[in-house]
Image (cartoon, rainbow, N blue to C red; front, side, top):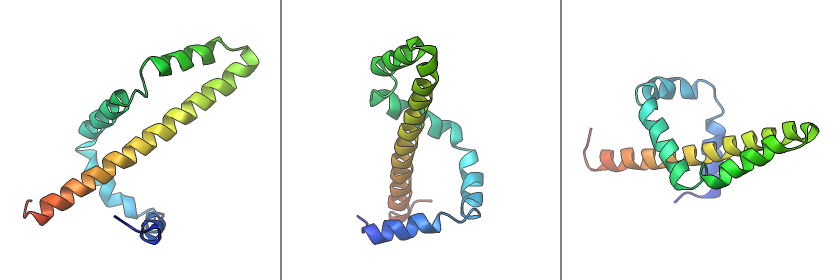
Length: 106
C-alpha cells in the first residue's frame, strides 16, 4: 500500500493539465468498456437501484422551491459516487496493468 505522503504527492503531480493528455488519448479507445465497468459497479453496489429511484421521486415531488435544491443535491451525490467508483476502477486497472507488466505481459 501507499503512505499518505505518497498519495498526496501523486495527487499533486496530477494537477498538471498536460499530465492527462496522453492518458486521454490512450483511454479514448477503451472508454466504452470502462463505462460499462463503471455502470456495472454502480449497479452492483446498489447506487442506481430502488433506493436511488425513490430519492429521485422524492426530489421531483418536492415543493417547487425545494425541488431544485433536492435535484441538485442528488446530482452532486451521483457525481461524487461515480467519481469514487471511477477512481476505484482506475486503481484496479493500474494494478492489473502493473501485475501484467511484472509477469512479462505486453
